[in-house]
Every structure is written in structure tokens, then in C-alpha cells.
Image 1: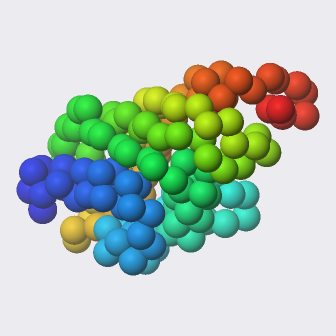
Image 2: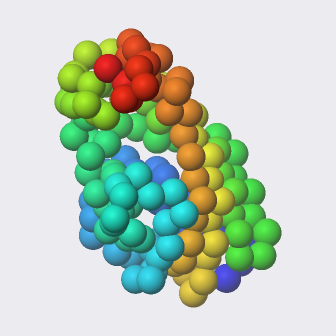
Length: 143
């Protein structure tokens, strides 16, 4: 698969699946054996973790909008940086809705095989997000 096709695939994940939250779209973009190297739901791996994480995010930020800033591809790897914007309308990490607008930067590396993502490593500025939501930090977690 060409670098441009691989970039289009990852852009589809970020600006398509992450924006819509459509689990059917995830089934098209990720391989059935997808490996998620950043599980946000302990005990839940791969594609099910991604679908659950995105559903949880949409529950908290229903007007989510993701926009790719930079995207690079070489071989079977694609690296991307994107910005997520939304309004905190539902519980997130035990924090009740605040109505605050957020803007968070994320980045990730995605490995592609046969037109689907088979593995990824990604992260977002969680500390910055919690600060935007007005969270205070305690040993047992954000409040």
C-alpha cells in the first residue's frame, strides 16, 4: 500500500471514526486482530478497547471534532498529530460535566497491513485536558 493510501487510512480514523464514534467504521479501518498499545480500559484489548474508549469520549464530549495537523508515512508506519475540540457535557474520568470547551493535542503511530491498521501507539495531553476541566489532583485520582 502506498504512503498516501496509508495516510488516508489514518486520516479516516482520526477525522472519520473519532469524529463520528461509529463502531462500524472502526470495523472497516482496523484489522480484527488489532493491537492497541495504549489500553484505556484495563482488561479490554484491541478493537473492543478502541470502540469503548471512543464511545466513552463521545458520552462526555458529544460535539467532538478532531482535525489532523501533521501526518507522515514511511513504509508501513504512519505518524500523526491532531487536535480534538469539544464541550464537556457528560461524566469523564469521574468528573461531572462542566460545560467547558476543551482543546487537546494528541499524537500516534499506526502500523498498516493490507489496508487496515493492525497496531498503534497513541497518547493525548491528559494532564492538560484535566486542567481545562478544572480538576484537582489527589493521590486517588482527579476530582
